[in-house]
Amino acid sequence: MKKKNLQFKSKKILSKKKPEKRLLLTLKKRAGRAKSGRITIRHRGGGVKRRYRIIDFDQKKIDIPAKVNAIEYDPNRSVFICLLEYQDGEKRYQICPDGLKIGDEIICSEKTEIKIGNRMKLKNIPVGTNIYNIELEPDKGGKLARGAGVSAKVLARLDSNNFNLTKEEKYVNITMPSGEIRKILKECFASIGQLSFPEHKFIKLRKAGQSRLLRRRPVVRGSAMNPVDHPHGGGEGRSPIGLKHPKTPWGKIALGVKTRKNKRTNKFILKRRKK
Image 1 (cartoon, one colour):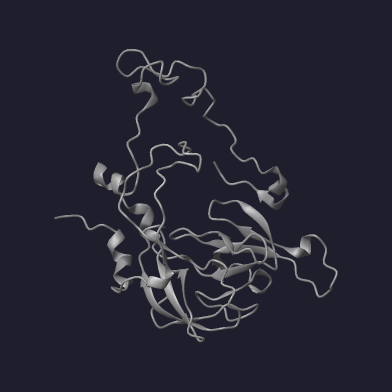
Image 2 (cartoon, one colour; image 1 turned 135 degrees about the vertical axis):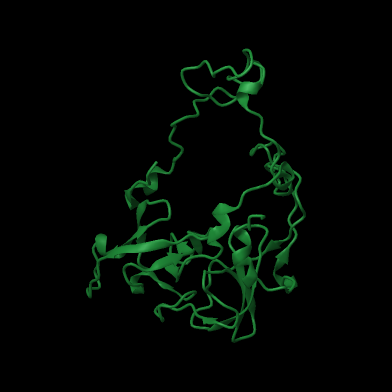
């Protein structure tokens, strides 16, 4: 018997309609190159043609209810997207939470019902609630927790009736999907629920051609190269690295090096993610 792939179970909820034409953009393929023409991300190129769906991460239509017209696949991201039609007739795409159905009604407001898909300020969301599409700064749009099956959780909050809030009372503690605990301003918006397509992490590419369709070009091991091409190259057969520290092709130490450079926001991180 053939094993059924888990990815198809969630895809049964997808609509069979074509994407909304007004919400599509054609993007030029850059194959990992910056505006200068130099390759800044290696092993990119080719792939299936795709059009970009304009996603409303800001959700600035406050206090206007919206009805879910369709749930669609988006080739540019792992999570499904839903097509919303607001009461004023405008249509917009948003990332779709798990459990949202066609015909459901959601709303973005400063304070509203705790319901899947609704969006409100962090100061009004109860402790222990799962959230996604979280703002880092007020009115700058959702930046955190936007991948398939992902959700963060409201961990703690200090409430006060005073107008002059202390530094601690201005923030909400959030547990991120990585396990990191972070402080975010109470005035930031977040959506209620967990994102759709949680089975995405179980998808396995069955052949090399599937990687090429996803714009991923082949990656060659450094130890299979010549010494002139990579610090790990040379030797006979499956030779070991032969260096004290693993290095990049440009000779920089690659293993165990901290990549976070934004020291300005370190004060907002209460607990680092687990390695």
